[in-house]
Image (cartoon, rainbow, N blue to C red; front, side, top):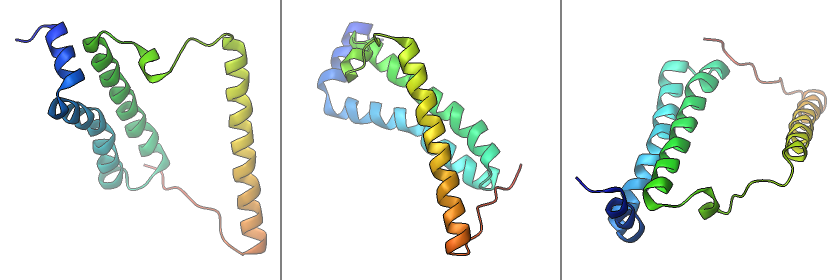
Length: 123
């Protein structure tokens, strides 16, 4: 069995190993899409309960790959923020802005174009 350092250097230098790692990281999200489409029937609830764990598993696989290389998230350019409060407030502001934008666009589309807002089937 390969040791952590050997496997990390293989993942850093071997193009086939890098391609395999990318495929392994993407696989849970792709499987999630298939499950949502075939099992969930395009419902919002299925997207949340299947899609969210798929993304979390992919993030964990990315972390394992970084750990094997001896890297951390700063290898992707991510650093600890100076202020977590500021990050939280920006996140809240973006969430409110996106929600308002979607509501406004749906309202305009409903009134001007006569389009109906989308309805999601429940599971």
